[in-house]
Every structure is written in structure tokens, then in C-alpha cells.
Image (cartoon, rainbow over the protein chains, first blue to last red):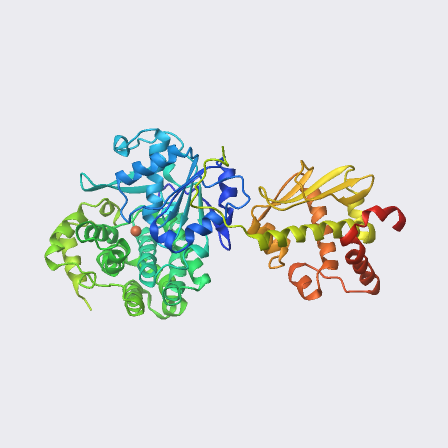
Length: 396
Length: 184
Ligand SMILES: [Fe+2]
């Protein structure tokens, strides 16, 4: 069903495939830039990925003006301001985000600071502060899940006040996203599984949230089918380039879907346990996805029924009577969770994720205050959130 | 300024092998095209249709290996490896993309389909040049490579074997353009 009104926006040029990173200098030049600052982290450097990026500048007019290698897993205002100083000191003219969600989000936030020419991100707090085109920005994801390379949000922690500041603006979208199979080959199995399930959650929630539309739907179903066919291979045999590349594509597709259709209760719950108990985002989504689907079953069961096709494939879909398909779709996700748990020890209960029982109330409270509940097809109150948390605690 | 203020920690590693391969491939192709324009009737006809004088450059963006061809007084000549302002420039966006094509891992049409190759100048002229390159490559490559990277491989007749021998024996080492008057 097509909504009576919707908006969809994704202007990111996608450069994807064999040796794609070698096109970085060329793409920068196309944007009128020759002195990029690369924002990355220790893990990326350690895996040799930064060197691959550096090598791409051989014999090119564009040069690596500066590289920031110390992005922490949860980026903060201090980090953003430090990187912005590096940008100015080295007379950079563009930004490259190389890494997982944190490095790319940091790069986005740095872009705000250097474009608005302020010394501190905090002075730009508030909605709709961005009024002008930012510096050329290219994203190169090294995980396959966040979809940050096609989203318009950057989340940065304000460590002094202990909150996460989301910045949302169309200007934050990268000009180019580069997907290169070489960039995700070294991701460890557990992170591959968790980030892959984050992408799965983006796609499933985008397909069922109240902002869904035909374009986000097409991206979401394509992403789910790719994840179904490739996540286990990528986890068990990390060197499989085809599976890695498929997962990178799925992540981008799911990112484009949820950037336009938003996410719902599963993300709200994951943010809850993430904020209160530091459960990694992908792990939280893995644990809550089947429970969130169950929670929404009465409201959008028919949509889950449709998702059984990309989730489980043709045979299962056609052999399941229509009325059983919604519940079967939940079961397909649970199956996948069990298989991932077996393959790499990915936590699929809150207990396995190390969440103490006495923190569930705090986490549920944080979840209902999360923006994502706004877009969930069914209203979520504190009791709902707590019930789901308890159910997800130790269900095995 | 672009050369002075750069990251000193992160430098591109030299790719001497790949650079040499591409440079050698460009040289080979340049000299072979020069010879084919004399010896092969199809290439000769194509080159006759080009404006005169004109300069063509095959190039790896932005400071990579280069090959220049010049047509003057009806004769196509290989004109060295220094970049010039050409009437038609066909360029690879980077060395890796050029290497894929010059190591025969990828055909040129596939290279264009993957946006690895781009051009400045008249697209129709470029099509003609690409047809000439395909014909020339059919002489250069052994059959088992040619059939992977060329759309059609003409059968090796005695006449074609002679042309191949002339391209490889005279055209590539010393250039055949200078003998254009004699052969015609
Ligand atoms: Fe997410």
C-alpha cells in the first residue's frame, strides 16, 4: 500500500566493488577537493585498511593532507573539536570518514564545525542550525551494518552532560559512499554478526514503521534477502569476498531504507540497554528484533507476512499458509539468531550480553524516552518495554 | 601547497611493478596502433577518417603513465609518454583500474561499464579509436587471452600472421609510421 504522502531522499553517489577505494582521489577531485582529512580509528589502522587508502593517492593530484587515527568507539564533542583543529591546521578542504559508525559520525560532526567556522560543536546545538552546504565528504564504511554512509544523522556524546547529541540534517549526507570488499574482509566474526543484524533490524523496521514508502520498501526487502543469503558465510568464512561485498551492499540498502522510513521499538530498546548497560548497538538489536516483531504482530502482521519471502526464501514462503506467515517470519529471525549464536557466540539474550537483572527498569525507562518509539506502528509504554526486556532476558 | 603540507605518516606505497606494466602496455599499444594504421585495412580506414592534425592521449589520472599518439599528414605516430594537451584524452581514473585492463583481467568495454575509464573530447572519435585498439589487440594477444578481453577474435590467416609479425618485429621496436609511404 502506498501512503497518501511521503518523502524520500538519497543523493549519495555509490562507488562500489573491486578496488573501489582507488577511486577516492578521483571522486574528491570531482567535488573540487584536493586536500582531504581522513577520520579513522586504531582498529582500521591496525587492520591495514588505512594503508590501502593511502596507497590510492599514488600519482594523484589530491594528497592526504591529514589523518586522525584515534576516534574512540563512542565519539565525543572533545574529539570532534580536536579533529576540527587538525583540519584547520593542515588547510584541508574535504573530509573522508573511514571506519564504522563512530568514525563516520565523527567525520560528519567535524564537517559541521569546520563549515560553520565555530570552535566548538556545542555552540551549534539545536534543530535546523545548518543552513549551508558542508565541505565535500566521502564515507568509506569498514563495517557492514550502521548504514551511516547513506544516513543524515550524526550522534556525538556530550561527555560533560552525559547525553548523546543527535545532529540531523540533509547536509550531513556524504556526497559519495565507497564500498570496497577489501575494507570489510578483516572484521571479526562477532562484529560481523552484530553489525549485520543491525542492518537486518534497519530493514525490518523500515518496512514496518509509520514512515514506510515504496522506495524504502524496495531497499528494505532487497537488503533482507542479501543478509539472509550472506550473513552466515561472512561470519564463518570472513575471507569470502562475495559474501562481504553482499553484506556491505545490504547495509547500504538498509541504511537508505531506514534513513527515510525510520526505525521503531527494536531500536528504542537497543538504545535503552546501550545507554544504561553499554550493550553494543548491534547486539541489542539482535536480541530485541524477534521480540519487537512479536510485539508489533497484531498491528503489522501482514507486513511481516510479506517479509517472510526475503527472510526465509521462496520454499518456506510458498509452503506456509498465508495466515501463518507473520509468526513464521518471527521464527525465521529467531532461527537466524540461534545460528549466529552457534557460529560465533553472538549474544542473543540480555543475560548473555551481561545485562544485570536489576538494570532492566532503568533500561526500559530510557527506551520509552527514545525518539524511535514515535515511529513504531504500535504505541510503546514503560510496561510494554519492561515486559519485552524481561522476556528477552533469558529465553533460551 | 599541495605537495608541501601532507601527512608524513601516511604515504602511498610505490607500485613499481604495476606502474611499469601499464607503462609498457601503453607503449606496446601505441607502437602497435602506429603499425596497424599502416598494415591493417580496417584500422587504416578508421584513421583516415580522423581530423588531421590531431593528438590523442591515453593516460592514468592524474600523474600516472601516459601514451601520446599524433596524426599528422595522414600518418599516425606514437609520440612518447609525456602528458600533453590532447584533442582526445582517454583516461583511467587510477592505476589499479588501468592495471586490470592492461593485465587483460578486464576487457575495455567492461572497464567503461565499471566507470573505470573516462574521456575528454569527442565521444564518436573515441569510439573509432577504441575499435582500432580492439583490432590491434587482436594482433598482440595470444588467442587464449584475446578471447577473454575482445568481443570477436578474427581467425589467424596467413596474411594476418604476416601483419602480426610485422607489428611485433618492426612496429613495436622501431615504429612503422615512418615507412607508411613505402607500404602504401
Ligand atoms: Fe541501528
